[in-house]
Image (cartoon, rainbow, N blue to C red; front, top):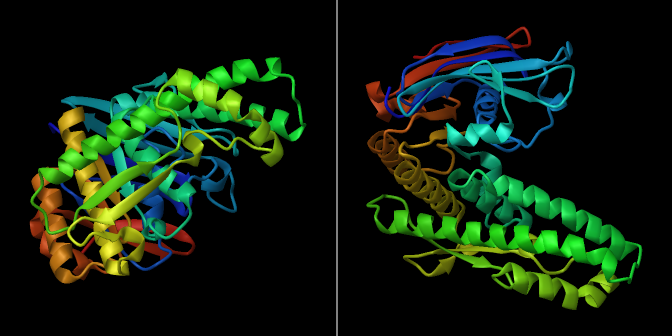
Length: 365
C-alpha cells in the first residue's frame, strides 16, 4: 500500500459499537444500512485519527457506549508513505482521550505528521447560510489539513483572548494588564491569518487545475485586521476602549468570515440552490484532497457521510470517478447499496445493521 489507507479498524464500546472490526484494502469503503445503525459512528472514529475534536466535535465522555459507560477504544492499522502504523485512541470512564502511535504515547497533534483526514457531513450542508462561526471552523479544518501546527496557534490565541475578555468584562483599564495578552494574541493571530490565506491559495490552485463535473467556488477571506503581528498588536491596543464598552474583543481572526461565490454564475453560494450548495461543498473537499495529495505526498482519507444526499445520479457517478482517479481511500455512507452501484469493484462494500441495540458490520450486497 503506497498511499494513505486503513487496513483494519476496531471499535470497542464506541458509540453504538460494542465490538466491531473492519478488515479492508486500500480501495474506497462503502457502508450502507438503515438510519441509526451506526454508520456515522464509524466515520467519527476515523476522524479521531487527525488533530482536533473529530467530525462531531464531541467530548470523550459522549463517545462512550451506553449504558455501560466503561470507556472506549479505537484502533487502526494505518498505512502512510510506505510505512505501517498502529494507532490507538481511547478514553477511560469519560476522561480525556489518549493517543498511542506504534505503542508509544503521543500528543494528538502528532497524528498530523502521518495522516490527513477530510470529511463532509450533512450538518455542513448549511455552511453557506449559517453563521460565520461554522465557516471559520470549516476554513480552519482545511487549513489544519495543510498545517497541523495551526491548531496550536488557534489554542494559544483563544486562551489569551479569553483572559483579555475577562479583563474587559471586569472593566480593567490599566494598560499593563493587557500588554502580555495582546502580544500573545498578535503573534498567534497573525499566524492564523497567514495560514488561512495560504490554505485558500492552495485550494484555488487545485480548483483551477481540475477538470471536474462539480462547480468551482471562488473563496474570499473577509477579515478586517492587520496582516502582521505588530500591526495587530497596535490595533488591539488602539481598540481597547471600544472593546471595554462591548465587553469583548472586536478585532482579530476570530471575527473572520469565509465568502464563497459560484464561479461560473457569479452568484454568492448562500443564494444558490440546495443542490448547488452541496455540489460546491463537494468541489471544495475534492480540491482540498488534490492539493493535499501534492503537498503531503498522498491523498487524504476522505469521510463522506450520506454523500449521495442532494446529488443527482450524474454527479454521484462523477464523484466516484474523481475519488478513484485521486486514489483516495474514501469512507462513504448511505442508506442503500444501490447508491454505490456505479463504483462497481472499485470499492468494498459493508452492511451496517443494528441487532439488539448494538451495531453489526457484515459484507454488503
